[in-house]
Amino acid sequence: MKMETTSNADFTDETLTQAVLKAFAMTPDPRLRQIMTSLVEHLHTFVREVEPTSHEWESAIDFLTRTGQTCDETRQEFILLSDVLGVSMLMETIKDEAAPEATESTVLGPFHMTESPQRELGDSIDLVGTGMPCVVTGRVLSMGGSPLAGAGVDVWQADERGFYDVQVPDAQPAGNGRGLFTTDDDGRFWFRTVVPSHYPIPTDGPVGSLLDHTGRHPYRPAHIHFLVSADGHEPLTTHIFVADSPYIDSDAVFAVKRSLIVEFTEENDADVAAWYGVGVPFRHARFDLTLPVAMTTADHPNQTTTTPKSLTS
Ligand code: BEZ
Ligand code: FE
Image 1 (cartoon, helix red, strand yellow):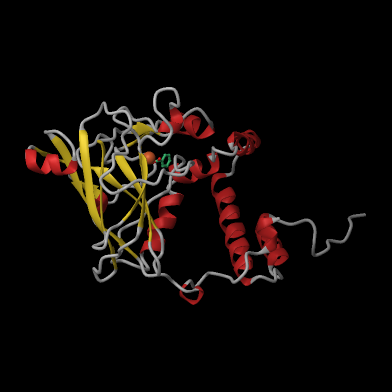
Image 2: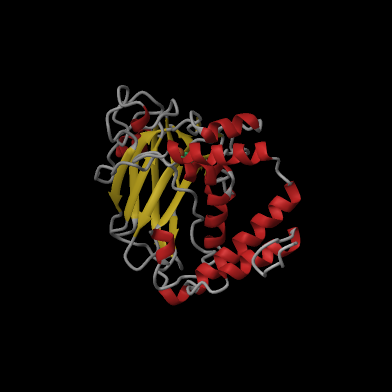
């Protein structure tokens, strides 16, 4: 004799989604409830649409397992996955809509893993001295244009061959291509470096294999990273991109914004070169960074006062 159907069994394709949504409906934290509801709805829609085979489902689980296993103290393959899927930049772009006057933000990337050495304004972050000399100058401003004195300007970049110091410890001293500067009374910063090269994101893990299987290249256009902080302001994570760099129109992590593309002009004025302590010719990049004013918890519509325990333990 057939058992009587209970309300918690024998789900059909249509009723299963509703049952899972109902199971999460009593989640005490309203934000976690919203997140889980939306996640279930989108995941179930995805499975209905794609109808993965068992083999495909196992491959997906295996891919995510390997992605986790590739992570360690210094490598975060899940963030890299988020980067190549465009999710990291979608997060940044949505966040930027709250402060349209501020400099646009970008992904942090995996190479901000060591502390940048404190340097004086005008110092060189190039400890090797083989590339085309380059001077980077600019100001840190608040929204409205007032200069921010004493702001922290943390910079890091690849060298002229496309490597960060941590990738080639035998070829570059630690701290090469990195510096932590403090703006002067007019909010100004300036430092010497070399023009960085474009380079590939790490391809030796599951994300690299995903790019390979989908016919995508792994390259990022040449750029210099900035992490800027000042009292009373939100920190800003961004890059400037070298205007004529290869891959400027096809960044593997979708981080290029028109407003962040900067001409690294060639300069031949010997007096200006001498002032900065470089020879001629040198390249000069000029870029101001505008920080959003600090938000209160009330300004973040989705911010809960506590992180749900279920997401951290
Ligand atoms: C980077 O620019 O350092 C970077 C950003 C995202 C993924 C990989 C590298
Ligand atoms: Fe980078």
